[in-house]
Amino acid sequence: MIKILIIEDDAELALILTNFLTKHDMEVIGAEDPYIGLSLLTQHTFDLIILDLTLPGMDGLEVIPKIREISNIPIIISSARDDITDKVIGLERGADDYMPKPYDPRELVTRIKTILRRTHTTEEQTTPKEALFDLDTKAHSIKFKGDFLTLTAAEYDILSMLIRNKNGSVSREQLLYDSEHIDDDSSIKNIDVIISRVRQKIAKIDPDHVYIKPIRGVGYLLTDRV
Image (cartoon, rainbow, N blue to C red; front, side):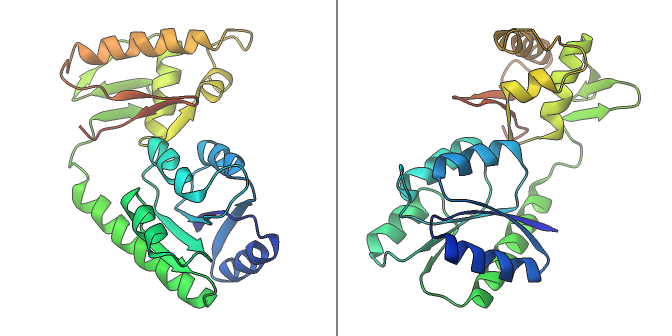
């Protein structure tokens, strides 16, 4: 099922879109505040974002680069602002489409499916034949470029979570509290220490690239895009 995040402060419009998209087999989560929307993006996996521009606390055009810091998720701008400059800036900052309000929700469904079909096809074409990181949950082992990584239990927990959320951000809190081998009373800073050790072990195999990247104010992201 397609999962959509709507960042829209018009509660009535958000409800209309939610009800319509739900009828087309899409799961929708809404946020009236852009900061809440950004937080939800770090907590859940979405396929696409529908983003209003006129939002409380932060303009939608400022939200786009913040989304791009943590995710490559497709973004459709949904805005009543008809200034061509807004459209140009939005697309330049990383949005995938721009829909001026009012519009027929049926067109929105078509745009969503078109964008996802295009992005999923691109991902399939660019996916390497052999993944850089090979996670074996039964053996509790991880290979990197075909070589086994020698990891402690805590390091395995952290790296396996990052692999399962590859190319998506994972908060320090999630890494801490979802780990089976890290005490809940441990400091968040312990996560940074463990990440540093894992990076060093990866760097022994490939010293030329950084695969675990910090996401300011959030946590970490593991990528195989070098």
